Length: 404
Ligand SMILES: [Zn+2]
Ligand SMILES: [Zn+2]
Image (cartoon, rainbow, N blue to C red):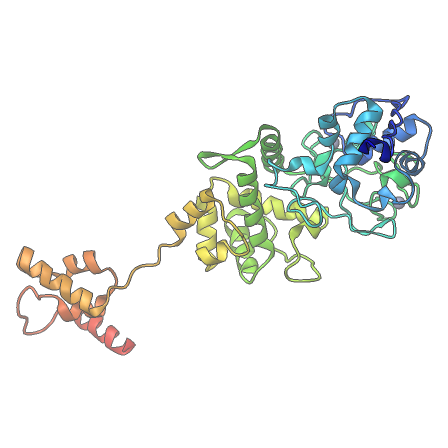
């Protein structure tokens, strides 16, 4: 008997019907924002819409869908909207792999991406920021993907600081549970009410440069043009040095003194918590300082690190693979601990000078042996026998003897 007849016949899959409402994602629209617009356009609650499409066994909104939407969900939305899967994928935070981050971690924390920490369907953290002016003036109010990024703390269109809470009740933004993109899910208040604070012009220009780096895939740093994820790794390290570690306080003080900014400490439950967990006001204060410190890269940074008593090992702390562009700065400016020649080396240098130049003068030995002064005084040839040594030599010898 042929084998095929024993196997169940492959059943044709039910054809997936496109949804009746299929708008294009708006520029830089976040996946969850797009899903809410799709649901509302079909007269459904976002939760009802998702349960109808994907089944209610797993509540998709109980997770950070923008960050962790599995590829099959993205593909299903593409089928329903008759749009290319790449276009839907571009609404996710995972699509930042290759520009903002090297690779996306689908299971946990990612650098730069703000956590929402959802527990029991409630967002515990303010990981979704918004510009009140954008929402108030949008023809169709929607949430931008870049509002989930830690360095994005102001709106480069409106020059205002972003918000991460309802101005009335302080609740985090929970768009799929709210009446509209412009309303708080908890108190129903308007998210766009009240004028927001204005950001500094230099800060806006700097943030625009970083946003452009995300678009282009490369970014300027000092005299160089780097792959965007390399430039972002360096910016993130500079920010981390201002927040975490035992030199952070000293570094902030030095930067505030020399270049400006607010050196007040950051409120954190643990010393090692990354800056992605800070609220938007604190992150704005942090990146204000990063902008000042990175201007004219790397000279201000190197100066401030050295002033704060930091060396290379401190500056690359917690960086798993320091990018070459960063390593090079370290090597050129921060490894410059003067070499102390040993006594036999000074003796050998003196002997060599006598053979080649007739005598070993203080000046020549200093040029070869650097700061090993005690040994130089012991091995140098004096110009002439002096009945009374000169005052500077007496003082220098006395100082050296007192040091032991
Ligand atoms: Zn705006
Ligand atoms: Zn509220």
